Length: 283
Image (tube, rainbow, N blue to C red):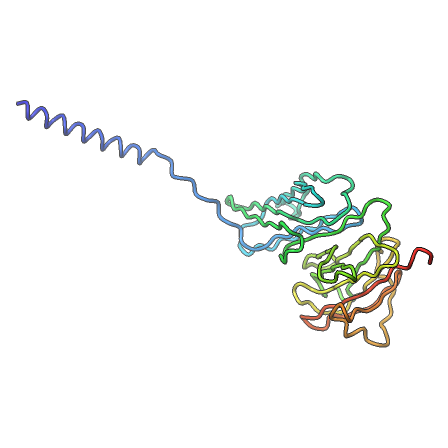
């Protein structure tokens, strides 16, 4: 009799344990899954006027539409969580949600150091650049000049709207031609062209390097001025003698302040170098 009671009790315990386990399996929430990753590249482009302006271009490799973007802008010992953009499906345009940049940035090199992109289905992606000189195809950097600081402005205008596009412009000190101090990369879209404003010292020479990140070819006008950026293509005549070869810093073509020149990226690997000398203070 006692043995039968123990058997019944054991059976009850086993059934209870099974029911408890089944209940946990049925009611325990599934472990969270990582959000799908956005693949591809998304670009936030800046330039200096001397205050920065913003251009945005996104090239995701998948079909998860990017809906929101937040960026960090890093500069001399500072980081700004500066821009939040949201996509409006009604008009297909991007709207700036908030902008934390000050009215004027301290002078120096500034670059996009972090981009966070949020897409459909909870998808997410992030890109980072701890050093503005890292070779990252999405990186954008520029030089912010101080108010009242002596500077020159360099800009390009393509002769044909179809190209060259996605042009990169870099500025170097002539005595340090291996490390740029100002950089601008325009997105791969028409009517958006690189331009730089950077400080100068009387009597010094600066090198300008121009190329296309995607190997686009075609002719363009380059204009250098102390009077700010031009709103229209400056009048320029094609040189009777070719500026080529000017594919290296040692072959840089001389250009004067206030002058515009017509140059050409003739093949996918072509690049153009220019040299501009700042007159001494007594001239």
